[in-house]
Length: 279
Image 1: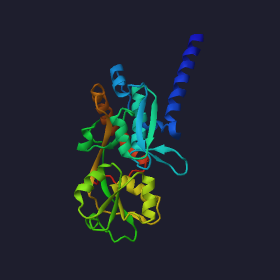
Image 2 (image 1 turned 60 degrees about the vertical axis):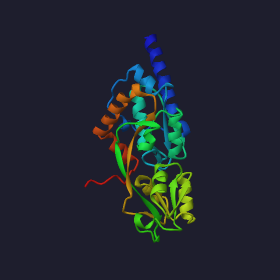
Image 3 (image 1 turned 120 degrees about the vertical axis):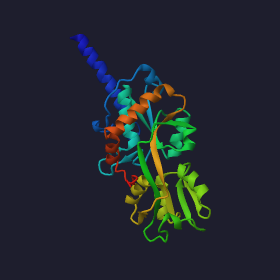
Image 4 (image 1 turned 30 degrees about the horizontal axis):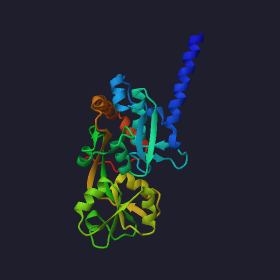
């Protein structure tokens, strides 16, 4: 009986430690609905995907694909946030959510091994720096403009004098800097700063995926997301290079999460909009 009590106490301590790590930066563990069907991970897989004994998940605030908070309850949601908790549960390790200002900082943290995973746009350029699973979500790219803007479509944004905001270091910055010839590309350090610059008319438009754009539009009284699209983002789980021993397990985890509808549920809980429409 005493041995049973001791084992119960040890389990309780481990659970408390896991939830304490999950609560870093004020974050709380998501609903158990986020959990993907369990498949035991071998020690070699645990070591590859969570070498510190903790799964460190990189996120940035303001994107439903990464991390958002409910204005009323303060609850945290986001595809990267929930996938991180689900993967940590499968690996039987605690989760630590590490928050950054923008996606470029998350990618840098992956490259330097400061975090172990995230969920982001799987571009060819990024694939040279980090490894990706197959894409789990496709999002349209679009524009956020003031409601009275004379920019009515993406085709009308490339004009001299137009100040087009992009997230600093983002894939949108790289693509649009090459694609547009006349508009001025303005890198913005955070999504909070985007709202301020749009309100103060220091930006004529802001370009990124529509998941972020709709989230921004809800927080502003005089902005709207244009209907057309200038491209597609293919979002996938990303991990640092050199963790090949864990990649087959991670790919199987991602496939299960998609096939069972868990990824869609995570997206719905985060309020993700702008998904690519079926033809």
